[in-house]
Length: 299
Image (tube, rainbow, N blue to C red; front, top):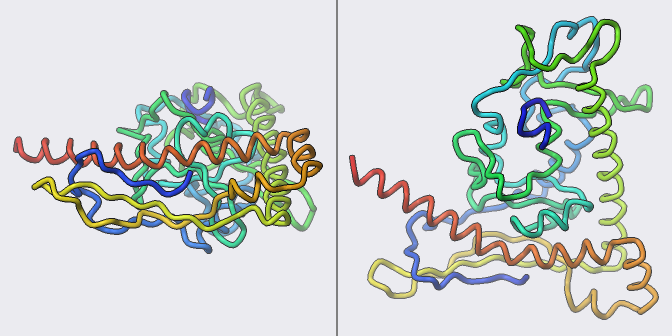
């Protein structure tokens, strides 16, 4: 939320469209169980390493009276190396048209997959996010974040002091106006509160899906063509968890009605639809590698 942009801001498949194996000759992995669990927990705490945040500190008037945010030329560079990102249940519908939404790790943490190689977000180029696609709230809240204050059983609003957009030199949007928080900061607080409600609702949804035994392990495979046109070696890109269409379909009528009445059935269907976007990620990766090769050939 600290930049102009962010403030506004099915089964496994194969590729046989004639692309060479260039750029996909090694296995690429989604987060491990530990990483997926950590990403989920990072939504409500700033202890340890927090995705995106270099120096998150509690926001207070004494320390940040002159601070605020400024416009930067590369507002989304902070997410350029994040190939996956936590996402909440209310976002599944919007995200389903952009990228795969999966469940990962023992906790079945919902994640938006934004790349098939580590440290490569296919939707960020030169610090700009491709506006044709949906940006998760997890990224839109930056540079703010809620941290759990366990001693007082409350949440504390924090800001990443080392974010490129955070400054104390003539900010375009101040954090404080006089003795009170600014309108910009109040808007950010409301966004964080809504995000936290969505996060808790998402945790409850996942727990219910687990109790209903709806999850199954899946994998994404890719098979392109070699330069001579022969089939390339089949490659596994990722292992993950997804909702089983068969298990969902076979639920008792009263259970399905309950899920539908609470909007959870729509979330499950959005997740299943989103899995067709694995092919988009493969195509985007191959296209990116082709552009790099063409550029290198001109040198």
